[in-house]
Length: 486
Image 1: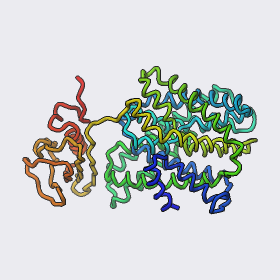
Image 2: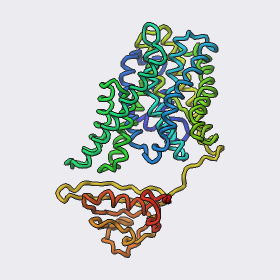
Image 3: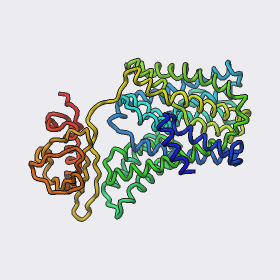
Image 4: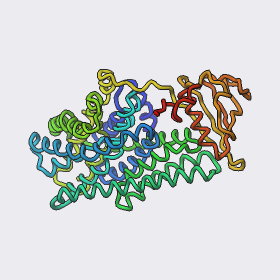
């Protein structure tokens, strides 16, 4: 199954289809209506495995989120995750009640379930499209934040008895988000501090430790009755921006776990659905999806982003990029586990809606971005820097890869002006290594070995990144290589 899924990723990347549809298709193909004839109807197990997979996916997404992009987008993303969800639930539930004829309880459950954008879908699609950092940062942060309020709403609407007053739900959502955020930031900071000050005996232990810290953030957050999903996302974001040792290996390990989580989760969801039972729910799913895609999502984006003066082009793209994926399908298992009347129909409607509108929205996003003239930043590519701690020497060995678009190309070693206690000790060029002189000119494709003592390690890395982005003008630019504002 893993080999088939890996090959399917290649096919989906060439065709522009989101990989989640391919995985869902594999699950349906081996299910009871497919060639595998596998009978699976355990919604509770699916929910448990789905939650576990989401933790890994959110951890991988947080590790890959740049703080420089996410920080300016946090207010807008928070508004979308709170007020935006409320608007989306209201509009979608009204459409489900008046257009499809569902009871209000079922309509509210569907409205809440499909109001959560999916982290896996957003991360996988957006990171292949060169978009402005504000758009990418807002959408990624929103997908990491909005799971918490939606889970609370779905559980409340699925519970037996009358739904609590709206102000009680708002208070619960605010409290869970606050607890989850505080725990996530605290666990992430403590984990990063520990990994930077404790030299592990093997490089392969660092990726395991990072993922363990991320999962621990979810566990602590959920145990404290906070948002575990928000905790794991924020903890992973802190870890991902902490310049940890052996970072490329950690990112590779996290990406591998993320792919396995996506494959397992989507295949299992495909197994859970029974295709021959979907016929009566196709038209209702299309009607609710139209209301969600063309009314609820754009309205929530406009309401939330107008105060931030976001251009209409970016609002249009963010309206279309509210991708649904595994999260709504997993949340649709909550009313099944709770025994809500009509819960199987709710699951089928959500499944059809996600498949159809992901098929429509995912492949058309690049076209829409080009039409709206929203291209990515054309700045210099960032350096690839990996750090290995030298425990006995109280120093670090930095491995620096100069990418093709780096402005470090053409800079002499002496012009790097590294702080005292740091020096370029070796250059690897075209497979050959040599000890550089101060006058040695660096070229794209070079790999440098820089030894830095512990006190100046961070300063050396900041200086290398500044030169990589600003070249010889780095003295007149900020530490990130962007023009300083005075």
